Length: 353
Image (cartoon, rainbow, N blue to C red; front, side, top):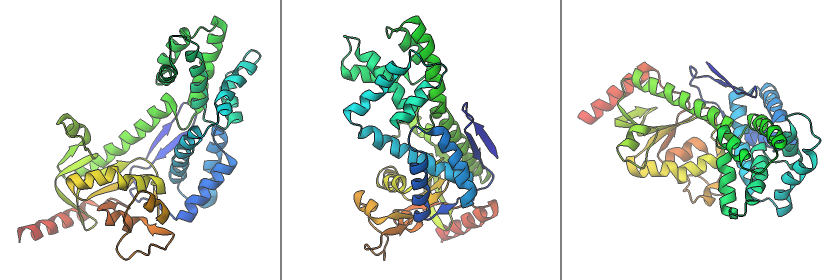
């Protein structure tokens, strides 16, 4: 069991010794998402953290699964919100900042603005920094956008940006701690979030690697494949075909996230589709669980074929059957050493005939 504690107190519990992957129905998934969207919309990160723990208790679902559902919703809602902003909504953060900053005390101003705008703190900060950048007559709109993005990749970048933004010493000294505080509380964007999610992803890949080593399975890692010049790189590509749960697979991908309908359909149409075309059938582990069925309408959007015998008039399709149809095995648990040995020996006998 590993526990990651962010600077903001957001706790991720990683159960790396229990490999049973939970699934929830599409109705359960939609219910959780609707509750989060209604009670803790974008900008309300602290409220959302409390809500996630309460949902885990009331639904009797694993905390990491509810956290995964929340994270997947947050990423999608975040992108949709930013895409559809009106001009006045884009201007609102800087207007509120200029109105409130002169008299505001403390470091929570940008979080307050994020809540008023119902946007994530990162995007509120980026809007404000963009306004500072565009004031530089030498910068075009495109350069100002790039400058504001670059400023938020690291805290050092941010400090350097503010030093050249034409702010007074007092405003600069006041704004920087507000930015740091807001970025720490953003559960979807920014350097703190990137560092945390990267750490979780690396840990899950590490434990999958240890399982493969345990079973003496030879593989080509993603990093090694890239060094060799390969452009299509699953997390682990097997030197020899492997038998998992009765299926022959040539690669496996580790997803330190929840498999929501949109991400599953997108992966089958794009990422996993490339792997299958290049290397044959493979497998995936959604460590935070997955939704048990995917809306048929979503599959049509991605031009994905339905499993044999599936009724196209049904509103949803079973996830495991869908992925299997597209030559991707969703692992609901990882085989024991004995199961792996028996399956491998059986496969070898079949090939030697």
